[in-house]
Image 1 (spheres, rainbow, N blue to C red):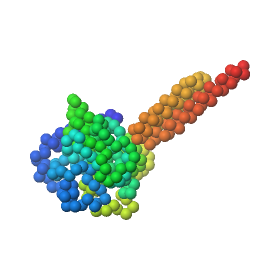
Image 2 (cartoon, rainbow, N blue to C red):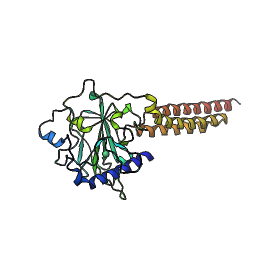
Image 3 (cartoon, rainbow, N blue to C red):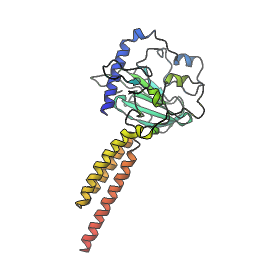
Image 4 (spheres, rainbow, N blue to C red):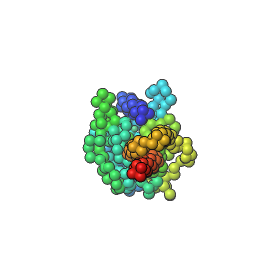
Length: 310
Ligand SMILES: [Zn+2]
């Protein structure tokens, strides 16, 4: 969480910096002009632009794909998406048919929506949305369907003290949300990262939007070494498991079934929080929680029976 907050603080800085430099960056070349695409009748492409076309869909953006945050002295990070500056309340649309695989509050994003598109083996990410306006919470969506509105500068990851430029952070990535963990550099909700985003399956949003067709078999995920991808999330789960099981062992030895029940419930609640945060490994904690609870019930029954017998 600290990492995410730090990341989003950097984003704030980059956005402010970029907006401040808008005049000088305007001359920069850019191959993608979504407004022009739309105007020239390219709506038949597989992916639609996530916003209403606007003359403002030309450079500069808050931050472009793989832009570096080298405004800090530390190791730079790369932007895994493209930002589009727009007023708060601007409607945001799904780029293709799909299924909402995440819709919730997320650190510096304010509200975040992720849509899986299995037909293209791709997911799209829409950040800095409004938690106070209507937003799609779950279920399937159609191409061009309204999913949310952009958030105000104080609810889109910004605060009254540190408002954030109102904008859409739009990312696309090969694979489905569940293919990636929620912790570490491979995290599915990442906005800024140290490795080059294209090495981790992130695609250039403008290139995907401009694609005339979906590649055969969908977009290919990069080669992923299971442990190096999942170890940060597994480590977190391991710590909770170790503490939970250690406490349970103590309670069992001391014949305190009520404590076992409490630990079982606690692990299940933590598992639920993991699930809400979109952490796939939460199910491991849920199984452990249920086992501890069952063990507590078993110990309680055994004590009762023994009590009745004696
Ligand atoms: Zn962004």
